[in-house]
Image (cartoon, rainbow, N blue to C red):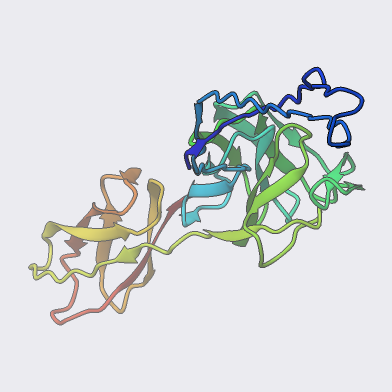
Length: 304
């Protein structure tokens, strides 16, 4: 908005009195005349005002778990590798964590790799922060935790651990991430933000791994041979386990009246995970084996 400004000043001056004679012939009294003079000065200048707007953003970190990679099944006695990746979707974090904990209290846990400032295993009995920094507790089961500070917005980091379950069945583990704001480090964001809580009174995602051995599927065979002769046949073995198995033994459990021998000739045999292998079986009929059809039963066994 534009404004025009003007300034003025005034000054009053008194002229010397005009005096008539103290008396006039007409007896008219003397008159004092005062003259007031006014002067005006004007100075011109321009000023302006304008309206504007601006956006102010106040940021905070936002913890987000982007992926959790783990096997759905392992066999007893083997390790499970778990990789957790986490991103900060907000402003810079003073610090941020990645935590994997194990409520079934396994004893064999280790950090495989990470790209954080620090990662370590905290064992049961150790004192740690809880309730998003509001208190401390002693752990009742182990936790693998890594942290980085500061953690800039938009960055993704990871931690990988391996753990050996101690029994068959469902093996459970928890995952979470917590971030602290700048500049005071107060915890302000966590993923998840609801659902189950862990021993630290903080929310976690729950995952399970099946620890078991799938019994291989064994095929059948049918052969025809003359008495006093032998033949060989392949018996399929389908391994649906996530690891290689080894077939180490073959035994007939019911001969069904057959006179002769039935043996496996290519043991031990390794069969890769999720694949099919073949056990070669030699069948020999004795010369005195009666003519007829026989049904035998057999068993294969091995490791793991």
